[in-house]
Amino acid sequence: AAAAPAAAQGAEAPEHRGDGPYLLVCGDDAEAFAERNDQVAYNQRIVNERLFEECLDTGHRDLAAALEAVEEPGTRIQILPGRYAFEETVVVDGAEDLQIEGLGDSPDDVHLSVRYVAEAVIEARDSTGLYFKGFTVGQSLGAGLVVSGAEGAAVDGVKAVHNGGDGLRVSDSTAVRLSGCAASGNDGAGIAVDDTDAEVTGCESAENLIGLREGGGGEVVLESNRLHDNTTGLVVTETSEGHRLEASGNSVFDNNADHYANLTNGHCDVEATQRDWSSGGRCPAEAAPVGVGVLIAGGNDTAFTGNHIWGQETAAVMVWGEPGAGDAASHRNRFEDNELGYRDDGRRFRNRLDLWWDGKGDGNCFAEPTAWHTTPAVMPSCEDPGPGRILAEPLKAFKVWHCGTDAIGDGVPAGCDWFGAKFTDRIEAQAAVAFAAGLLFLTGAGWFGAARAPEPPPPMSMTFSAIATCLGALLLVLASWSGRSDYEALAIGLWGFGWILAGRSWFSSGLGAFGGFTALIGGLAVIDAVDRGVWIVPVLPVSPGWMWLVLLPLWVLLALGAVFRRRPRADARPPVERTPATVPPRDRFDW
Image (cartoon, rainbow, N blue to C red):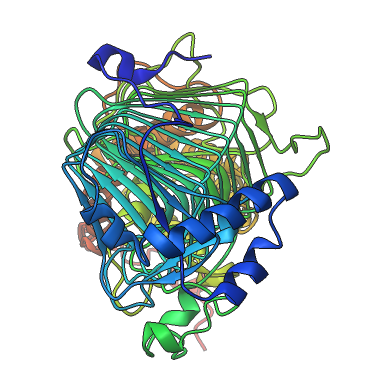
């Protein structure tokens, strides 16, 4: 097991305390308390009955009043079973060794709510030694529980439900331990960790927009968590210097919830108090791809080992960098020996795609023997991660730019399969059809231009070139339809081979520049096919696809020149002087 990341900071997450000064919080309705307390196990139920009588005499009716009564470090605030509604956020500011715990068997026994009139239920700022345990926070406009600027904090068995933002949010803190927590039905991330040294173990996050979101700096350990039935299971994004994440033993599955129709069907147009939170779905404030287990989007230095990831309808793992050149890629992310497409009980349950990488970044590696389908078809190994590239593969770069994780406002971009686009509506299918049609047209134009050359190619010289080019165009469309990156690599290779043959014929026909340029592009296409499907070509700082793509406009100009150039006129022949007839008159047929 990985060492606690906060150890290097000299701070530790606090342990639960069973003794010391305490304050009680309870309601004043004995019948409501008895009804709730009857669901608690016998021993704790008897203790709670005694504490309720004490609370009626000397306790507090809400959490804020109890916080104001805290006089010394190490105080425990104990909340008896019941539902507590506040009109404003409960703020914990500058506390020292404060413990707030619910006295039930589960977090559901103590429910804290602000009924959608405040941004958070509990907000803890700049405190040390905080310990939260055994209660539920819900119905806030923003996050349920917010911990910021903490030095040493524990969130143990806390649940967050039906919040308008994140469920449990921790930021700018050190030595934070989240254990046995739960989050469901939140519009943002169930669990959000930002710029924090933290451990998240044994937590369950389901039916949120994002199961767990992590970013910024800090060192984070994720172990034995269950992230399921969200839109995206785990997102690592916008990390900074000093970031490190280790994830092992987690189960990430069935993250296929599509809530984006709610942005246009009126579900999200009503007030939060009027929404159907239990079954009506979420109201996303950001774009998280549907059907993705683990997304690394501009994240660095992560290590995923021994996790089970199954049942994703888009991809088990996606790694991409931010659009454009520069250092906005995802770097040094390692995926090794995870069980992709296998449940944690060993049964087979495939993902639609196991690995999706845009080709950008340095030091990313994938050593996944259980991976079935990947794109590209060949991935960098962890023994030889391959070259660092400053640009993603062209089509994927456009897709990340068009379908990324920016704010979405009232709708999602069109053409994105992870936002619901199907079949021919997908960007990949449209691009493949357009490119195949353009390829056949341009190749035909090239042969027409060659036919107008001073020495046209022989009639049968285009046979093999035409066959290879047409097969490549057809296979490219089929590859985009099926999502098979190995077919895509073969299609590009066939097209490149066809253009090499065509360029050779055109060069021998007197079209030296045009024929040589065609063969050059064909050769680059073959290299691109090898890079995609056989072996990642070393040294190259960009995908070979960019090389032939940027040369195509110049090739089109040369092709147009070959088609429309004027053919030279043949020289006029000199007049023929005929010799006068010399046949004798007697031999003439002169009638």
